[in-house]
Length: 237
Ligand SMILES: Nc1ncnc2c1ncn2[C@@H]1O[C@H](COP(=O)(O)OP(=O)(O)O)[C@@H](O)[C@H]1O
Ligand SMILES: [Mg+2]
Image (tube, rainbow, N blue to C red):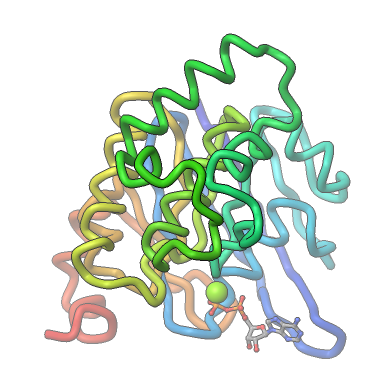
């Protein structure tokens, strides 16, 4: 089943034409990565998908429904969760309170409790720091918290914006392993935006390459990783 079908979307910031016809598909149960250099339009794409930015033209279908132009809170309830660039945890609140806030659209107390347990298993570092203010966590730990908080909303599609940005390499590896685990164990569908093409293509099933607001290449992640154009431009060899 195609979970997300993005058709030829255009987005402007005033006079700046940031997305110039982006099309992509995400099949249920897969990890799809959108890679590209700084400024290519990756975050703009996610903001448009989650309803934070209006489309100039184009269409977005999510689980068979058109969501282009729908307000953000409705899109969240439809099951599309956007874990933003820069993590955006609530620094003064504890780790536990941040996680609980992720479940704000839910009322199933026992489900929430068991999901918390699941997140502690995925991220043992969070469990050790539950009563600590989120702002005192390292960057990598805050990223784990942001992902955990997103999972607490039980989304159908999890969109992650540059989970590796500004994080120590060892923690990046841990985070990517966990993203893969979430996909494998929970059958979570994931749209992963990354500048770190090497890591992203390793865990993704399918990939799209964005350059100045356009998709210039797409295919199986393993094919992209082996493609000489990708190697030269994004993989540094
Ligand atoms: N709020 C904004 N106002 C004006 N231009 C913006 C804004 N946000 C992003 N842009 C521009 O849109 C383009 C795409 O940005 P962005 O989607 O953030 O790229 P990426 O996430 O791939 O680094 C860039 O040229 C950027 O300068
Ligand atoms: Mg970005």
